[in-house]
Length: 101
Image 1 (cartoon, helix red, strand yellow):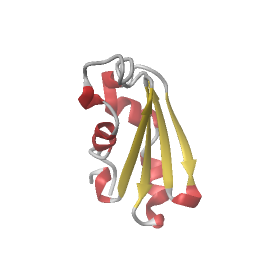
Image 2 (cartoon, rainbow, N blue to C red):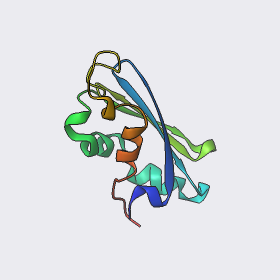
Image 3 (cartoon, one colour):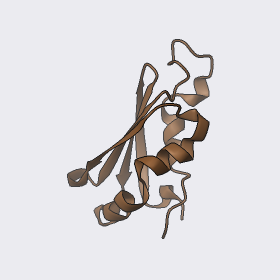
Image 4 (cartoon, helix red, strand yellow):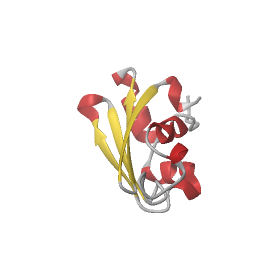
């Protein structure tokens, strides 16, 4: 099952850091997200796109996980010509992750 079947995402960026929030459609799916979508899996999912540390913050009261991806924006919007790698594009990439159903 793809992550997008149980969650949606919001994203923002600042400099060379991307911030992606993953929010369960149904709060009952939060435990599955917490179990399946670890910081290590997110870092592996992005591969060479995330050159720095990936940190996960759990927000159970919102049914959400927040990921901070350092070194994910090729120097940042103002320093890079790779506009597709910024902002909401990375949240779409995260939602393609396969998880256990």
